[in-house]
Length: 114
Image (tube, rainbow, N blue to C red; front, side, top):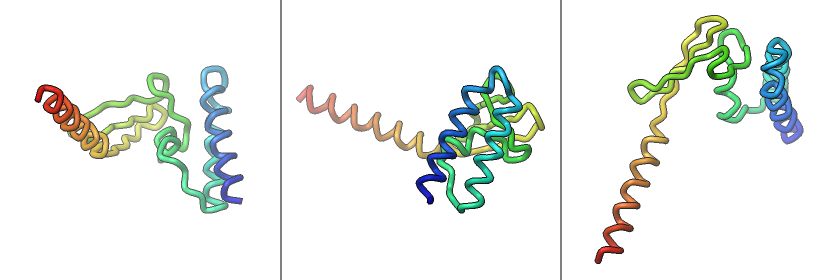
């Protein structure tokens, strides 16, 4: 049942993505349905989908249309233009990965030069 719920949540969010430009209210409804499925069957949504709706008004967020995304002080700021809610999420993992990649590329260049 859990796999079926995850599959339905993915389908609903993909439909919300497609329908937003023509029918934004329909895409907001798809998000509500996906949230209902996740709460009913106690399924965690993926990080990709959790960042795509407002935690206050539960509307689908499309960057540039009804939301703003900014980077500041190691955090990603999502601002919903529907209700004005500001959500902040850290991006420490991304910074660590970038640092690791930089070190690895340095070590590879050092080995090639030797």
